[in-house]
Length: 213
Image 1: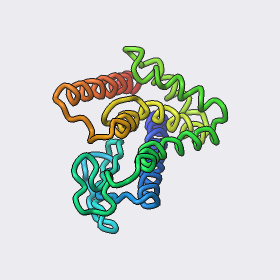
Image 2: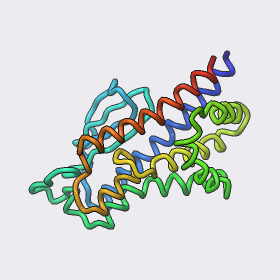
Image 3: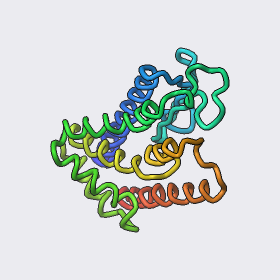
């Protein structure tokens, strides 16, 4: 049991490190390219809340991270750093940049295996229906591999997932920016996105429970 707890702690630590990389890169790119961050979420629910440099920060235990930008998805008004006032290239850089950095770190840690892992990740996120064997192999690897390998794999798989063309992910964000408008908010679009995200999360949560017991 202690070994299992230690393994899951390693995996959780790798996911936490990925969240820190994502937030730091997104915030840094926004500052460098002229966007204004208004809120940051690192984990849910927001058990710890504070403000840093005028930015509302929320921290929770359930993995997940996002940033809110002034004027994104609505009229930026008179804010000179509103999202829609930025050139397209800068908006795309802020959306995709953190995942390119994650990919680069994964390659530095794993070498060419990182790119293979990302390529496989595009399929593994959506298929097979029962990912228990995948999760079991990853947990077994995490129990014996160096932390650098675990972190590299986490970065690779989360990069693949976040580049999927879903509105709540970076891939969908790129599509929104290329369309030149605010993110789609239609009922069918939101319902479809929610279904896909629940499908992804539900499968892997089910697999994690099976591996844990």
